[in-house]
Length: 319
Image (cartoon, rainbow, N blue to C red):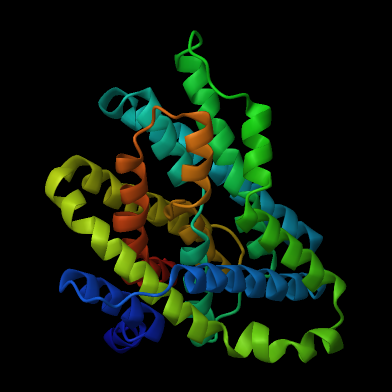
């Protein structure tokens, strides 16, 4: 990837609107996206992504590729939280380590959507089954985090895995993206063409508005977090950089599309700030939301959006 391509990536409208949101928050502008509109756009993005993924799956006849993708994704969701928990439990304590491990083992749908947008704007192919992989990676990391907590503190009450599993799989984002994936698979090409202006043509525009909103929210949290939590900032930068780099190396030895390789890097490097906080509130109420939520949302998320995506793609091309 030459300097010209890197500059083009940095001029991506979605990225620039995110930076605009950060800037508006720093200068204390009253710019904001209404909460109801933000929720609608989030639902739209998941719906459009799932539907397009379902359509892509109907054209993918290589079952072994689907199995390989699912295996890699689930492996990431099982291995990453174990490693993160073991690395952080002595410094953060087992409750906070459980939440951090679950966050970094799970995924950020918005980061994934932004990476998909990056691929589409650069005309880079990726497999539709990657969307199903993303959806399936939400729950396993949460369960693994709770298992690690149970192993460390057998005498302490923790919400049952059954309750946590139910909460993880009935989470609105998981239900919507899996449901949209199924609808996309069942719809014919002709039927899908009828809603293409909504699912495809409007996608990038809605993504830009959503990232503007995310930039505003990140900016409001990042100042106090940077001031008081140097160690947490270090971890929030180390995990995505390390995991994304390792995934790029692993993907260089696997026969997959470059687009899929980038999405695996993002799936491994991103952190959940929606599904995991909701689950941790139920399962591990002693975990401090002031630690793991800002780590995922205020540090790791903007790092992946601004630096991670072009960096991981550079590595994939260089290896």
